[in-house]
Image (cartoon, helix red, strand yellow):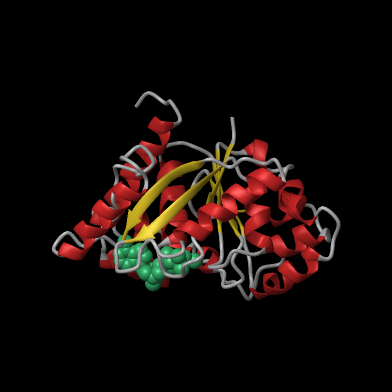
Length: 259
Ligand code: ADP
Ligand code: MG
């Protein structure tokens, strides 16, 4: 069974791309076949795999717009079992173009349908906004993973995000359950980080939705993209690598896999 997971939070810098790149890599090295769909015109996920975004022939934009079949835009990364549909700046106009079309909200789902069955996990990386692209991602996904940064005002905007998810569920009859809430950029030396954790527990009523895995602030995670490598390749022994391997295991467990 394939599972499409949208990694979503309209806040920038909360670790969406880092989570997509490193969770996808962890699952791939564990033997799953994984696809990353880069839906951010900034293309940070694309460049994190060492792909030159100025030299890509086919992007997710070309597939969405209907110029090419999505299979043409699906390319291997240098990691076994891991593929990507890259993005570049052309995607920035896609929201406007899509909104003019009939049934604009199902276009991404329709676009991806030829590749989704080829993979165990499909991760969609999103820009920091709640627009047409986000609605498309919700409709195309089986679940949503929400990274939340351990800092002041961490929960600001989360209510808007959850409202958007509910609205899509109600209006489009397309429910997208929350896969999990992931605390990121956690610094265990600070009181603030612990306070945010407590706040999240309160807000989400217990710990069921919260992943047990917490992603620490780790410099290796921040450095890896500039070398065009996921952290697992850049520094396999780093705490960042270990944390994302743990998250991947937790996801497999949530999906009922015996480990
Ligand atoms: P988003 O995609 O939500 O905008 P990113 O994943 O790009 O967020 O992260 C924002 C910045 O923080 C990037 O420079 C990234 O390398 C860095 N970063 C993300 N997660 C961590 C972490 N756990 N530890 C250290 N730096 C991180
Ligand atoms: Mg990003």
